Image 1 (cartoon, rainbow, N blue to C red):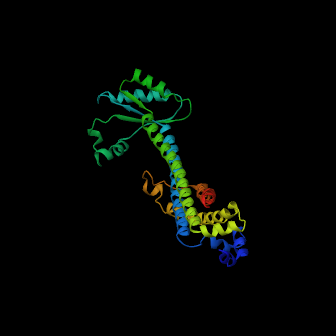
Image 2 (tube, one colour):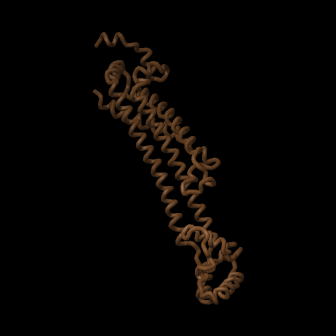
Image 3 (cartoon, helix red, strand yellow):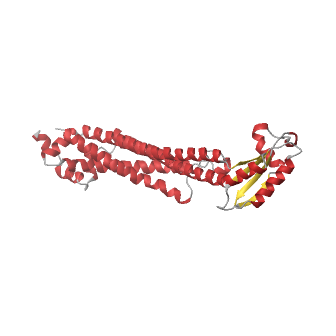
Length: 308
């Protein structure tokens, strides 16, 4: 044991522990090997997933706002009546709408637009004239003075064949689903951070266990557990930040190459960031470094207390 103590370069080793010599720190925390690769890979993968979870949260928030805004400002009146009465009832409905405050515009949908609405169910070239299709009147609200419930009651009393649809039964489930997806994205970010912290703690414990003999020697010369742990915390925090930076860049590139909403028009084609939203993923590497710092410090101090 005394021979081992004489062969140790104490000065370099101590400078490495207090952060003045990276080579000395490398003798305690190996710069290469399984633990280094595991930490870098874990941080990179978690940052990559965090970018997509963050993009999902932003996209679903925009989706909920867009659905709510587009459906809330549009009301439809459906007029169903026998062929010889439908024109007269439609005229009465238009007269009522002209007298209703809060309506910016009321127009009857022409046959070609009605045919476009029926195309997904009946296919192209729908003979709208030959079908008992009700007349559709589109209403655009012009202010807070619009009273949908009052208009519904008046139509029921004066034009029994007219039905007002303010799209509430369509809007509320869609907006609720979008908000739940947003919450799911936030929860996913929390789970990603927890999984990354667990992996970094395991990597730190593995590195400490592999250097048990060195730790015992350091204790013989008076090194405290907090000082020994700083070497591991410093190295693993740096690895976490570097890995997260690489994963964040790859994630942002993957998001940037996704199809745009205008190009495809599908449900999740708007997944991504808009404007200043691209700055949010840049917070992931510092947050990953903080997670690595606290996870490694907790794991290091916990294991050092257990090492005799």
